[in-house]
Length: 191
Image (cartoon, rainbow, N blue to C red; front, side, top):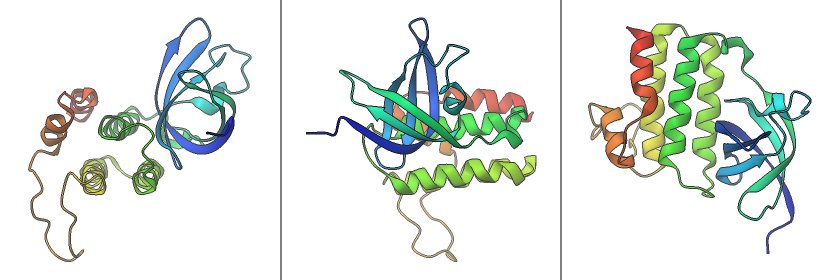
């Protein structure tokens, strides 16, 4: 039997309004993989949890088991990435990275390597120039696909990569049997 309450660290991948004052959040957690949870009352201006549950935030959360979705009982922000939140291009890249993780991973499947890769990529946005963002996203896609078993791992770092599709977005869209919503948005920002 599961514990009634548990805690984890996670990155907020997406969220949507639910009811009058709640949100359903998709979080990629360090210990539980992708989880969908309810933040009760977080849309109220007086909510203490509200600021800790912003998109892309790296947050420590306490959860209680719910009937269908677990419920956030407390949240404390670890990193908010304020340095690039006002930069529309970098926010677009963050959306893209989070969408890839959300669409390619199954719920409740722990994957610390993907978690660490996403966290490192979000942290690196602070110091990158615009011309460095495309290589970041392409490298991220390859590493996530390798980690999840969709691409063969590169045997040695000094050898050229083999077997990587030329159009990674099309390859990912084929895997998820749908389109990436952020792809079109990123094109409008970079052209």
